[in-house]
Image (cartoon, rainbow, N blue to C red; front, side):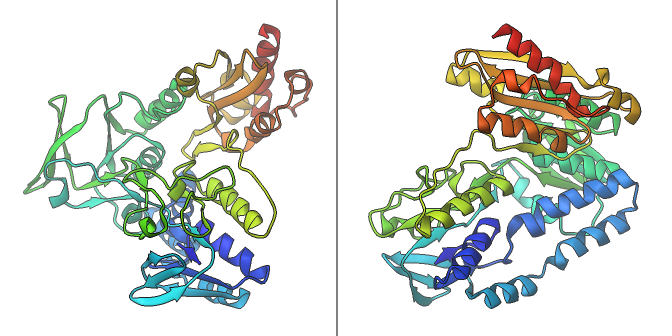
Length: 432
């Protein structure tokens, strides 16, 4: 029984069915998940349309076509052909080997949790009484607000701020922490902040939302620093939490708490007092990306089919698909400080590459991070055009623990942004 039909659930269920297992998948929304209909696919489509200079109407039409107009019949039919029984409805475990889907009882042997995550709505006075979007709404409706306030300066907030600003909305971003992309190296947020400001985005950094009221001409937002903003729509991008409530997992002895993921071991098995329980994707809270969900799903699938595979999360990329792109992988400086790692940092401005001159765009920088005690590359970050493509080799180097002596001997094609990693690699090798 696979509970949740998103990226991870679809992969696990289909893989098990192909291997001859008897599989049922439970989904109360759309089979295919958030990424396909309300997140990665539509947001990247709109960002591409913005770069191409398309009209809003053209962009929306392209977005909706790519998401299959948010209909899952073809996916469900394909899964049925593979041998998966799709049960539409909300599933709740009622005891070992038992689950109810909208009141109908079913039995199971193994249980795989793939219920994903849900947006967090901050407890701000008046926020629940005014028109607001989460990313689901912002990426599925045809509306183009004249004035949009984005709450949150993380990856989702930054991507959608750039989308709506590019198509003519007056956009403001409210981020309490004082900078964008707080989990990543400071330079990454600074490069992106500069790009957004150049598009006319009003960044209110270091301020929080105090309360919201309706006005005749729209909405009025009061900020903690005494400032105000007027808007026609509020987009809440203040993070997501694993969807664990109401699943009945306590009947299996699985400990959960609001805001935290289901605990998993290195094989993605969930500690349980009753039966075999597994989990993959956002519900684990480990690495909340579509590619991480796929990785965990492959681990679950392999382990259910008798292999033994353990997860290694050291090189899961984190990407913000704005222009310029922000790419990070491995340990970030903030995390290294928290872990007590003696971090060596070396960086390089993309303006020094010939490719920047060719592209007529000098924005961006790359930084590489090495663990002094181990003499290995353990993290990296970049902000620049196409960084999601040319930084993949760094993810491989971190995962494979490639010696710096080998990395410094790699030859990059000219002129490419990939050349920008050569100087910091040599610097790190010399300092080690």
